[in-house]
Image (tube, rainbow, N blue to C red; front, side, top):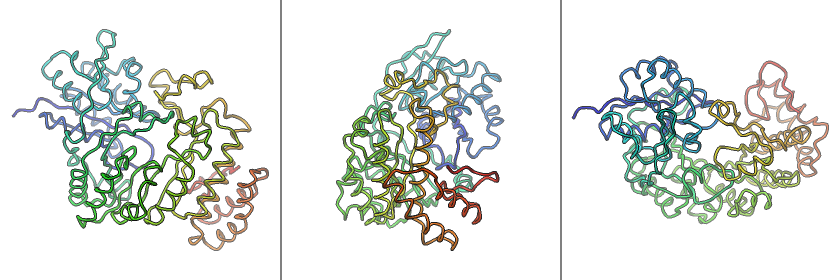
Length: 500
């Protein structure tokens, strides 16, 4: 059968090493190929000359599809879309992914965007490509937003398709060697499910997936993971699921299936503490035996008032302790993600979180922490409140592009209050690193950290952060020993770093 045409898929550059080939493009490519389209996938992470390649490949393409996440990644999407339009103004440019799906009208307002695929895009993009190939109308394609003569049209939402009805992502298009060279590990990004049943007020997942949990069957998941690990010599599978163990029997069946296969590899996932706590100790040990090496949890805060503001009523402090304990029994590392600066949070709330998390870190050597300043992503439920509080809301792609993810854009967190929070964070992270890494210290590091350990813990208990001599001393020792920063774990720049 003759090809219906060529579709070019592009993933813009972003900071940090890639987990692997972009799964979103691989899933789109699989459905397009099943419908007899040729697919060219270009990932800027491994394609240094992606602009030249885009120009060459788009000459005879039906369309160019670009997947976009909120933040600096938008810069590359704008760059490529603008180049395509300058060289082939007739060629349709289609944006998809989280950001365009959450803000389709705003995205269509850009001159270089012709269409937006909203939400689950596999079938929508296939039908769009078929319509372009056959010069048919776009009006009946569910899940598509498009414009004509300046008028925006948003077709009806597409009914969610079961993941089991979709083909295996086109992993054969992946250059695993190239990703391994960049990341230093042969890793695979894979998803067994999408969606989360909870409705956290700061989370875009509930808006994108509308709290629906859509999962592959356990049997298909095990078969695919084992096949991919074996065929491509994968060392670690990073699950992109929003909340992997929502269906506990399914999660445990997957772990047992991996063990029964005899294939050894590491795998990681994200979850919420309540689901992990519903597992018995033996079931968590089962996860560890199957290769689970790390789990990430959105614990966010240990203040009941803040958790209520976040609409995280399912989150309990005692379950955070229990999660750490059970994971340690299973030999599994844990990261607790924390959010500071949430609207309505007080300093007392922050102090409570720092103290509780420091206590968890002292008790359980398998726990580390990832603290972040609250970032207002597009479409989250509390934007009306944020507008009233004076949070600047970007109005177009260029403004969202300039939004530094993780940086502070909160009008209530400025000046002395922000400086104090930043100092608290440094003491908290320093204390956690001391608890984690004492056995690996050089003599100088060990001596310095032995000196600062007790006063740092006193500061966290008393919330007294004036005259931060411990930070100065720690940074000085790190400049002497391999110039490596104790606070961030990253190599220090040549210029002097102000640690307080």
